[in-house]
Amino acid sequence: MIPQDRIIIVAKVTAGRLDALRSLLKTMTLNGAPGMADPANALVPFGNFDNIHFARFVVLADNTLGDLRDYPEIARDKFDPYLCFMVDCDGDADALLARMAQGSPRMKEIFAHCEGFDQSADLLGWMRKYRVEPMASYVNWVGRSVLQVRQEDRLHRHLRDALSAIQLTNPQDIFTHLKRQAESCALTPAPPTPLAWRIRKLVHMLLPIVPVLVCLACLVLFPIITIVVLSVVTAIVAVPFAIALRHHEQTDPIVCQPYEASHVNELRLGEDHDVTNQYTAMGSIKPGWFRLCTERVILYSINWVARHICTRGALGRIGTIHFAHWVFLDQRRRGFFCSNYDGGHEAYMDDFINKAGFGLNLSFSSFIAYPVTNWLVARGAWLEQDFKRFQRHHQIPTDVWYKAYPGLTARDLARNSRIRNGFERTAMNDDEIRRWLAEI
Image 1 (tube, rainbow, N blue to C red):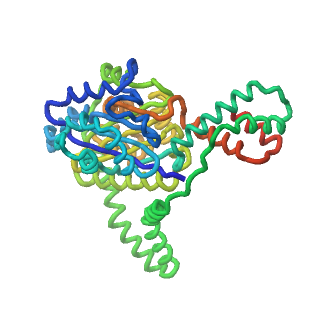
Image 2: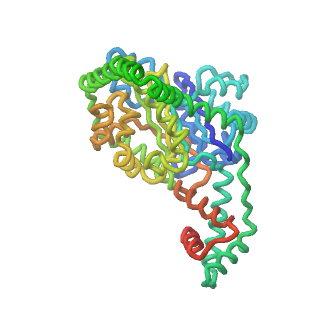
Image 3: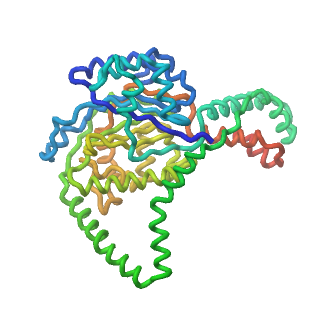
């Protein structure tokens, strides 16, 4: 299979160039759909690169700096706006970056609005310099390529049209007829998974597991000593952590966030132009080492789970997210979150609150103005209206957003893969054929 990778480039916008940058980014969009990229736009023709799933340009202009009034130790004047360029792709992202630098030289016009960019400089070298790694990333279905998505969608549409015109009633005859009718639909076999990727994935998976296995081995060989050591470690680490956590939860300033009608209306202008939407939100992390360390450990855990467990269609119980990334800014004093999700915004938020409210608390409770939590996992997101105002307040418009397969949800992609699996089988019994036909 082809594993997925990402490009995330973040650079400060030069003072006085913000409005000019936004005006330039608007030229990349389709008329009548704010933020929706024209795949053939002159600056970065995303449609020319057949391994890009999603891409975006977004000006990270923090909407929440006013919330820092209750944190005088944080210098608000240090938080300048950034430009973020993000791509989710198949295969090696660095190779794609080189292709984009060569095939889209007019990207220089965009990055010329950023600090440290010289029109005569090497575009690829500059982008590599400002490329950052996310603290955590999620891919809905690891190994499902853009080519696979498009070929399977074409197969589904071909089979659906053929099935609508068929006069046969016997399942076996229908199956044989449909396979013959769709012979022209080319289906490229999945390539072998790169060995280097497998090794990196295995090493990353084992890093947190090895200490656990060592503890279990010690518990079997030296039970009394191990129990004593674990008790001491718990007393030294877990108890102080619990005390510090509860102290912070009870003493953190409560920042009231009223409903911002004009801001929400601006955000809605960029939503619901497709069955999939984009989401970008940013804010400041509560000051102090405790909240930062807690956030880093949590995001490491989320990244581990997303990389090794939630790789086949769902993040926990949520199956509507295609890709998502958590990124730190400004020496980890701020952060932003980007995702591509199916359905409307309200349904997206309700999905999270109802199915993974504790996950929202873990991910974002270290950010200023998050609704009050109890022991990190309780309350917080379940204070529904407070949470919804919090996330809209932190959300910012995505200036340019590209999707390689408009009109298809993550559920559609999974269904099309099941249809392909049935199509490629040499034989099925009548009940299996009926279930397969129901998918079509």
